Image (cartoon, rainbow, N blue to C red):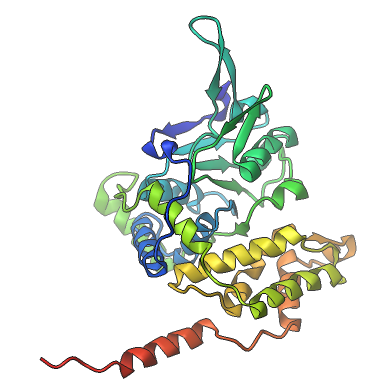
Length: 359
């Protein structure tokens, strides 16, 4: 029964998009991403790094887990991103009485008595799984096939999900009563885990003033791209190069987590693949067709920390998974290849060296 999930859906022509189109030019990826984030920032104030990370996860064709306290714009981020990109949107409020078919849909009798499949709320381009840790593991697991295989199987029949497909889940880390912690197998399916955090006092003043000025609760955002362009941006990420030094750096970081004394379980090969995917997407958002070690270093904590399992004694000492990743980064020499700063300097020098055209 869908009533228990409190699902709200928006119809979108993007449901008809099933395959990636031609890769967008890398420079256009950066420009388009900037337009998307600028428009979303009209609703979500002072959180550009967070928005960039969420968009990076989308362009890397992965899924994002936002873990933070209530009221810091987690739901607003998802709704705003869907509005600006034209992605079909659905929201699932996870509750203890939710069952798998509430998410996937089920076969129901048609007008002639023949069973027909009624899609559940997982059949949308952008799915917000609100407080995903409030439902039992069996219900949480119903999203696993959707996240990994981009399909839903009901009564032995597989149903393809729309493309692009992006699951953005949230959970509250400070309230554990009546919750079901996500098992490691499901956490590992999320490409990245992030925290939004409170706005600065200045940003909060801007937020309050904007609310007064617009005279309504929700801001009205304009659509700046369509789902087909998202697919073209995802295809462009696949053209971004990653040299042997970057690959070796990723392997070194992942291996260091497996050897760390504070961990029971280090990052899996899926963790290394996820780190490389996010690094290539970050490069594309920066307008580069090559990945730098700094792309990897900047993203390592967000991509790897939630995939690690602490030893009991380390947890008792207050060690966090993010601390372990930071420690691993400190012990591994960063490859001496181009960093983001090097790229900026080289670009500025190239622009300065260009001859000015005479009238």
